[in-house]
Every structure is written in C-alpha cells, then in structure tokens.
Image 1 (cartoon, helix red, strand yellow):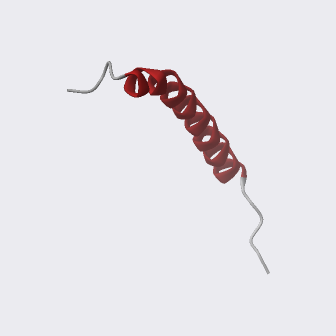
Image 2 (cartoon, helix red, strand yellow):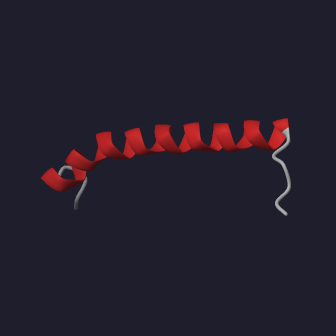
Length: 41
C-alpha cells in the first residue's frame, strides 16, 4: 500500500515542478541562439 504524501513532500514536489518549468522556459529562450549559430564557434 503506498504511503500518503506528507505536506513537506508535496511542497518539495511542487517546487521541483516549478523549477523544471522555469528551466524549460530558459532553454526555450536560449535555443534560437544556438540554432542560428550565434553561440557556435
């Protein structure tokens, strides 16, 4: 039987999901730079 999620675990999962979303936004903003060759040697 699975354990119930305690409030601290729920908070940590929520923060991790938010941080992942923010990271994905940064990656999406940086991607056009690398595709256009600005960030290449």
